[in-house]
Length: 223
Length: 117
Image (cartoon, rainbow over all chains, first blue to last red):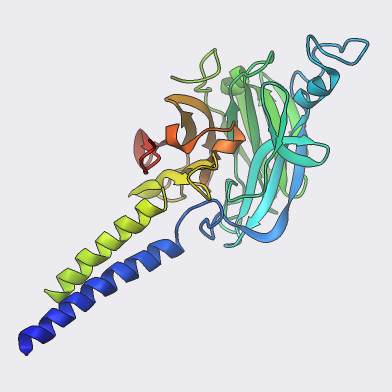
């Protein structure tokens, strides 16, 4: 009888252990639609907070029919579309910026053929707790996939303690617009190593961050 | 003995649950790895490093067929969270997450877990 009770308790312990662990892991699992609260949009939507022109957006004058090079006008226009930072709030209350392109008010990705692909809101932001950190500084690196070179897109979210964001490249200072608590700028990927980001704080101090050299190779990717 | 059985079972349950989630993640000071999207065939996955361990620099790259397609750097606090759809339409089966956080771990890859025939 005692052995039977022990066996029963043993089996129950195994069942409880498996079920308990599965439940805990399941509730903190990390998938796009069921991402952790830290990253999952809270349902209040998102805003395209700030935009920035591509460094070469107006480099080549369009043909009389609006086309650029061998590209139809519509494709050239999409390829020249602004870079953008979209910001959403996560279920955990974090601020989550992400970089992309803005075409006619939509946020998405532009491929090398000039096609635009809207990106639905997902658990895809670089989420930061602005009650703990004063700002975030992110850089996305895009390989060259059209006649333009590779791009580095500098972006992030700022809290109320940040009063200004300035890009410093080879001595040239460019003040970035802060809109809806976010900023964005696009530069040639090759220029990343000679670029700094200065963040002015309300207490009069400045944080300066050197951007690391890009890891992309000349052909736009790493083996 | 009962406590040991409970712990072993909990470990087994956790491993099985993570495998079902199509993630390939672990903790080396801070959690990081390959995280699947909403399905195994939606061409959506993440290269991710969570915040912690004084990781003031983090790099998360999207790999496809052994080639890096693009990457995100985080030079501040927060979660490094590169989404494959940011750079293209890449299948999970040939996808990898390359992650690097010098304060916690060296550069290494995580891959899609399930078998892709």
